[in-house]
Image 1 (cartoon, one colour):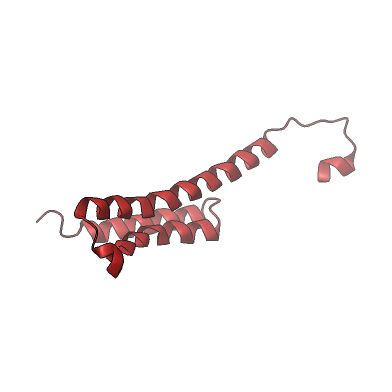
Image 2: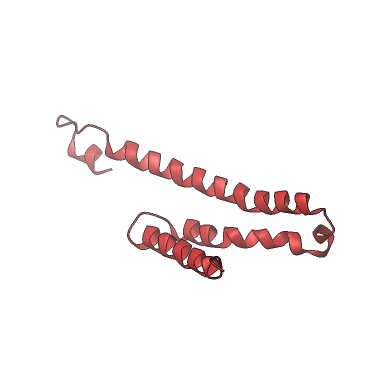
Length: 103
């Protein structure tokens, strides 16, 4: 079937993107680990109490367990990016003393 290797390709692709972001971009180690671990949260619905939920609810809980942490991590990364962009886009003031420019 055409989907036999799709899980393996998805895992390898996700790992490659996170590693490129970590080592060639500005992705922190903590956020990189969180992005790699977040899909594993889908297994939470396999706990005995949650396994008794109807199929539709199990799918919704599985989706929420993955999406909520990812939204939080993306928000944190976006804030860090915006702060770094704002710090680098300030105009250079030649009349400022040297001590203030080094901070």
